[in-house]
Length: 632
Image (cartoon, rainbow, N blue to C red; front, side):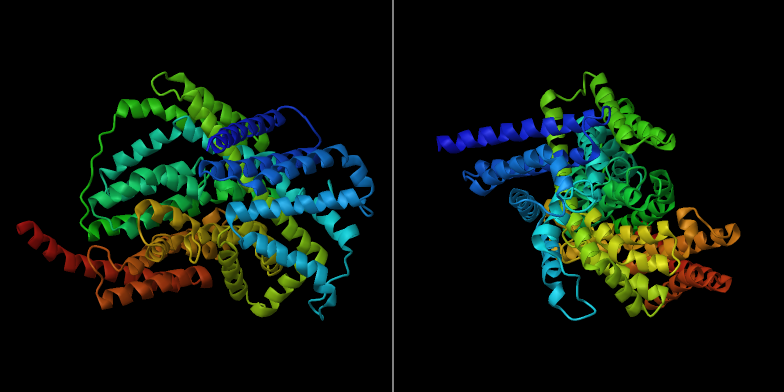
């Protein structure tokens, strides 16, 4: 028993040590050119592997077990990283004829990344990567049109996947470089913000709003998660932070467990499209497409506001339907005001540096510094050293997982290139769509949701960006809109079965069943599943109208259409919809959306007319019932 206790202490200390060194290294790399870009990526992946496997070792040790596999993999990760560091020049010279030790190191690197993927975020992505490697090896024996070029495993495939430093391919390629250069720092920023107390202000504002709105604690979830999304953009992190308060509060005032989980999951998931942070996927999009991040951020303002507007409407409807009583949580407004700088200071730094055109590495560093400085000013709320260390360690672990996920994506992208799938799949999508944009969009939507099952959003987005997005571009969809379409559905796959990562976390806190919570979350987040189509057909939504006057019409149609859609899905406004009212709202919603897809003003008139008829009917039925309730 004593040896197990010792192992637990040693592994825990090792995790803290390596995580802190990893964080300090990345922070220093923003200010000084410590190593050339290729070596920086090698070091990042090495740290990510070691921190991940040490974390697994610590977890097993805390349960009284010894994970020899994790211990061996820590050693393998160190050996691989040191070898690549020492022989980087020689490897670039013998890339087409690697030595046996080179090949062994390459195989070990691939194996370590695969095992890390399986142990940390499931089998989905590793299976996809393994299937593509098998296809690259065996595809030469398949018939046309799926036959691949002949590839030598030793001299071509392994170097492509793990030894080609500086080529942009494989585990140490361009995809992982995005994480190594700035995404790791942005993930770290979110963890430090939480540790420094930046979420106190968010929860306080949510409580004030919740005391005034019919949805009560549900409004706390929606408003709190939207504010938190401006600086973290992580679904799981948002749920863990705000859900710990809002879900028990929602259940306490009468929300069913499934509704509490659904509202929190939908609200937190919206953080991925909430400027200025928008989660890591938007930064990957900037790196992948070459579109400046500021443009991507500005384009998301209206979609994010529309999403949260409709989500708040859903919460209000549920609150009225269930006659939720408002819970007035005492908020010390003076303390709230004093906490505000911890939230606003890094947000102002982030936006200011973005608008001035500074690099993402630079702004991530100074955002972290601003959080630490503002968090340490007030003695009363100053975080302890232990709390800050835990924040750094948590950020290093999350950043390591993202690094390893993108390392696997590097394998996938490389296999797409060397096998010719990068050309064949877009051609297949184009053939299946028959040249119709709407069908191509539908295929892209389905692919994004399926590929998003059980993997980080950035993984699903990159897979679709490589396969289906080229078809949309070929059909004339502008670059930003095509990639936004894929990114939105990749993000909202966190709410769709059979995996729905966001719902799993929220339902765990709520104690609700997964499937009912999942369906309810999709109803709450209905706007998120329509907005990508609006982005393509009504570019005014991303502030790029083709015609200003009609752009205003499209925006009005979109807003009213989303209002009607949520009314239909909820089957309630002022009271339960009758059959005739529901039919009226359905036709109104279809007409309003038709305005966007057909560019015909007539549909707007029909939609507005029917929407007004439906609202009048609801008012007529609601007024006598309300008077009767008040009299009773």
